Image (tube, rainbow, N blue to C red; front, side):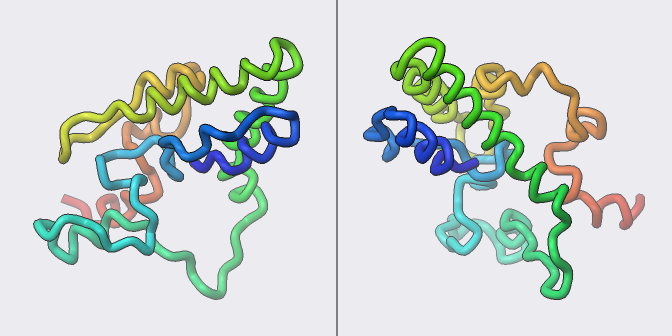
Length: 158
């Protein structure tokens, strides 16, 4: 998840964006491992211990060239960003300009907490601050981190 939209909204509301160079959330929150979600898709800075087959599974699959994205998919992918932007605006109007900065700082601090390399990080502190633990989503129902990434496991069978 990218803070650029939140920074743009906070700068338009008069909030100082000098802390924008700090650690932000990964673009596909929540991440499942140290490398998943922390590296941009075009980056090849994975350790040399990864084989080409395992490193290709960490990068998201490109969309098909002839198929456009559904409008609902675009809306769902921007849901957390727009909800966060609205929460920052509400906090700034109710409590002053320090409130969105404090919320952003708390989220950045909890996003920096990781497990040792190679172990999956659940980022429960960040999920609690963003109130994502109060919702039941598809990932919770299917007991997987990324439901669309397990298609080949379901079709392969035992």
